[in-house]
Image (cartoon, rainbow, N blue to C red; front, side, top):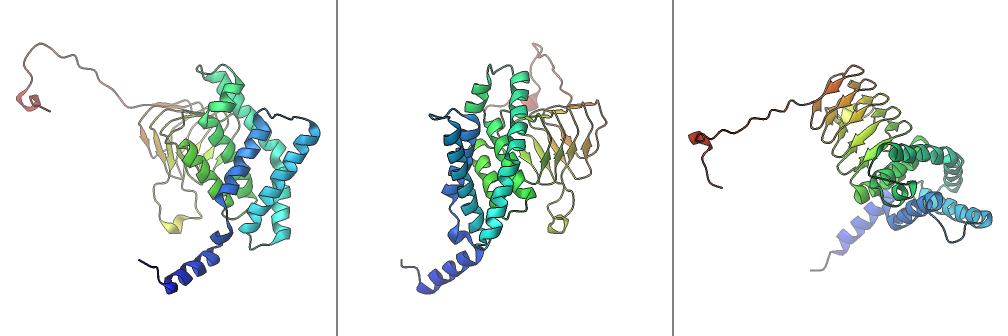
Amino acid sequence: MKVSDHLVQKILARKKLNGDLFFDKAKMEVFVTGLYHLLFLPQQINTEEQMQKDFDGLKKALFELILNISDHDKNLAQKEADNFFLALPDIFNSLVLDAESILEFDPATESLAEILLSYPGFFATYVYRISHQLWIQQVKVLPRVISEYAHSRTGVDIHPGAEIGSHFFIDHGTGIVIGETAVIGHHVKVYQGVTLGALSVAKELANQKRHPSIEDHVIIYSGATILGGNTTIGKDSIIGGNVWITQNVPANSLVYNKSEIKIKDNGPLPESLTFVI
């Protein structure tokens, strides 16, 4: 069935209005992975001259990405690309601390190389830190597109607006969700399936703190759900797996679900439990 000319024109007009007609997600992915490789993975040529050339190429790529979502304002795009690369040394230092934290506490890894080459949690943290920088520079749309790339690759969904301290450790990673206004301190460890979410998704709350605060040296085990902008997990606390928290937890707390083990005897099962699957 042929699509009507009228519908085609409407779609093209909408695309042009949204600006996505000019945005190439493949170029974004090349930038994100290219920067990661340059920062952390061995290159065939590692001379200072070659690295500077590679950085210049990445800066140009970022300029073009920002240009496509900034109404083609070349001065603004160049300024934001320059500001990002000025902040890059601090981002790199933070990521080194994140990787060292994984090496220190994860018994399953033996080297930084293993982390840099294979750990999805570290890659998700890298993407968060570069997208967060663009977010605080108030670059439109691009930080969200970058963060969604990490989500699709790793299963970790961290909003670029979240604030995360140093020595951040994601273990396994799959299914982690960290909302826009979450605040996470230093030396925090988060396991798979953790949600730091909002109690309400009402649009009128968009400019309010909707997600929890996690203080320093907290461990949050798999499947835990912590909700609400007024919820704070105090420092040095341990949050057990699969708990549901919507209120403050004092410092040095241990929160977990009670488990019970009952040993079967040799008597007959109650009638209500005798069934066939």
